[in-house]
Structure formats: structure tokens, C-alpha cells
Length: 395
Image (cartoon, rainbow, N blue to C red):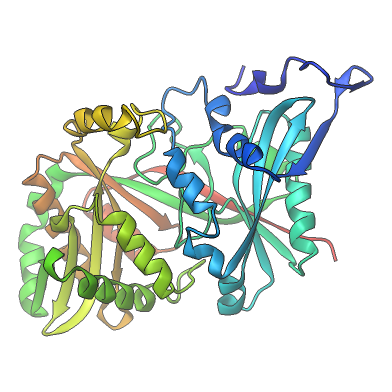
């Protein structure tokens, strides 16, 4: 039996039946208690999944609070719970991102934070509720899962297609295998696949001479984040990010509020040496960001840092020997010059000095051949695929 099947298998007290089957009802989240149920449902869905890493409850709660997260300044989010009698058996968020609509000039809405027991009726009712909410607001396409956007990720987009046996790294999603059939049985088709690559730090020696040639040929200077001028460096990163990703699928420019929020969130956990800025002369042309794979420690705190989770987190953090390359970007006119390989090589050298053995490079669009080929030349292997789905909404 798949993890979570039992979440709605027993008839709760007070349930009504029709023909011996308890009906599934989807209702909007309308109270603090409902919101807590929404946040805590994954603990039931993944109860028997040995590689799932519980999210921090406080982070999810803050992201869903319009008063605390800047995403809601340009987006509307509706939360729904699926009930079978008195038991919560699924959840979904319907997301209207006005910034995406304006930037891409398409009437596309999103669903996200999707969780369901292995029951097509539950999935059908959840997706129908989200689609109806989006359609009533003029959307023609529903796409997802998106959690919440490509700039404001509680977890990476998509559902897992392969690589189920490997635990997710920090800020990456992990979903049951049956989510694919739940979505495809509802008529959803692939919008885009996102890949995660694994790169072993042992490969670095083969690229040392190439990296040095790139550095000399293009007069590249690389430095790490300066915590003494943190705000100025964050502004540089925002400038590069919005230029580097402008043509990417799903991209929406980050607002000032979003970049400030991200910087505030990352400041306590970022390793300055893992944030690299690349300059050609005095021109900032690229950056890359590594994070230690904090999931190694977070899996032991069960979603709560306080009162005792902090101690567990600090204890297990000492064992982190892997990283995630969260992002790497170059402004368009400096691509195809080997600067991406130079940044990756520089990150490997830095992480080797901290005892890191390897890490995940994610997520990468399936058609980003420049990045994919560069990683594969360095010996990286694609080991996980995440799929974002879409479906036309009825006229």
C-alpha cells in the first residue's frame, strides 16, 4: 500500500455514505485550524516514505501569510482541503500570479502544494476546485505544481518522475510515484521537465587548466559575497538574475520586496564563500549560489526548530558533506565563453576546502542544452526528473 492510502481508508465518526462509499468534499481553507490541517497533511501522505524530509512548519506558514510574504503583493492564493467524512485526504493551492500574467502575456494560472492520497477521486475534486477558481478569474490554462512560483519556492516545481530512492536536497520537492497517474488521468500533459544533476567533486582536476584559460582569456575576476557590503552585493545579484533569466521558461522578474525577503531569509544560513560573483573588468556578468544540503539536518527536526529542534539541527549539521548549486546565471552577452564552467570549477574548489564530496545542480530546464552539456562534460549525471504539467481550462 502506498504511503498515505490509510489517511482516508477508515470511515471517521460522523461520516455519511452513499452506496457504502464516503463522498469526497473539497472546501476552501477558512480558518486557522484549517490552515494548520493544510500545512500538516504531508506528515500523513509521507508517513511511510523513508526519504521524505519534513518542511519547516514556520516557513510554510509564513509563505502562506499575505502579511509576511511579498509574493502576495502581486498574487492571489486560494487554499483548498479535500475531506472524506471527518478526515483530510488532500490539499491544493490555486495561484493567480499577476506578475507572470503581465510578463508572459498569457492567461495561465497555477496549482501548487498539491498532496493527495492515492485516490483518483480525491485528485479529481481537488484539481476541479482549483481549475474552477482560476477559470472564474479569466484563466485559460492551469499549470503546475508550482510552489509558489519560480522566485518564491517552498519546494521546486513539478512532480518527481524518477529518482524516488534518493532523498531531496534543500528546497527540492519529493513526491510519490502515483502523482504522475493522478495528474495524467485528469488530462494534464507535460509542460516542461526539470532536471537535477549530481556532480562529484572528484572530477575537478580534469578542468583546472580549462578554467584557468577561461579566466585569462576573458580577464575574469571572481569574488565571494562580502557580508560587509551585503545589501550592495544582493543588488548586484538581482541585476544579474533579472538579466540572465529573462528568456527562461517560467521566469518572472524578482521585485525589490522579493529580493529583500530572500536575502533576509538566506542571510543566517548562507556561506559567503558559496556565493560567487563574476566580473569581466569591472562589469558584473554572472553569479552562482551554493547552499549546504541542510536537509541532511532538517530531516531530524520533524518540521519544528523550537524548542528542541535547534539542538538536533546543530548536531546533525556537522555531518553535512554535500551541497546544492541553487542557481548559476550569466548575462546573455557573456554566455558560450566557458564562464559557467569557470564558476562551477571555482565552487568545487571552494567546497572541497570545506570537506564537501559533491552536490546537486538543480533545477535545470530540459532544453537548457548549454548548461546540460557543460555539466555532462564535467562528469555530472542527471539522476532526477521533475515534471510540470498543464491543462487547458474550459471556455
